[in-house]
Length: 85
Image (cartoon, rainbow, N blue to C red):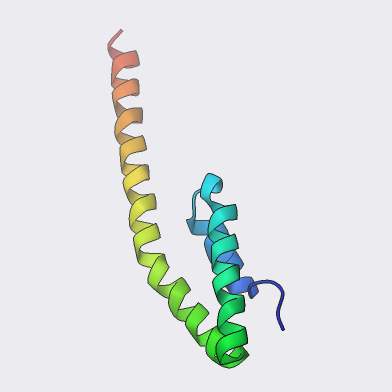
């Protein structure tokens, strides 16, 4: 039985989940994955995991985009402020 999530799931979490939330997110996902393995077998657990990761990608990307836009707006205001002084 796999003790850790497959690499693609760990990489997706590392790239998309905020640093301060990663450990908890990985822990929850790993726990649910292990339960699925025991209940449904490795094949079905892997199918569930792929679906779970893919369904999480869009909301996480949207969140990242919002953060980047807000950061860009703040940076623009800072540059304008410094430029005008």
